[in-house]
Length: 128
Image (cartoon, rainbow, N blue to C red; front, top):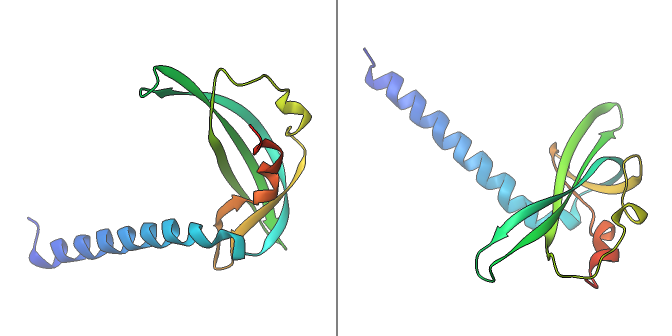
């Protein structure tokens, strides 16, 4: 039988998890101020994303990577670039991003598992 104390402990853990997730989410808005380290791309994928408003699918470029902070790591991350319409001009993505390539990664100093590719990685794609 669940006691009041058990119920309270579960509620406290749920609240802690919720605020931890909220902190992670909000901290992403300030990622450009985080420390930067070199990482390595582990995979580059295009994923089809349904887009109902215009009746066509979009493609989302997803880059997975790993990095270390000193002796600590490896950490992993995955970042997606804004969806592309299928009708855009074609380009060879592997000319710009490929597995094994070194990239700049930003990470939160108090928790490197919260990380994001640096904006410089996406600069080649902004003209699309």
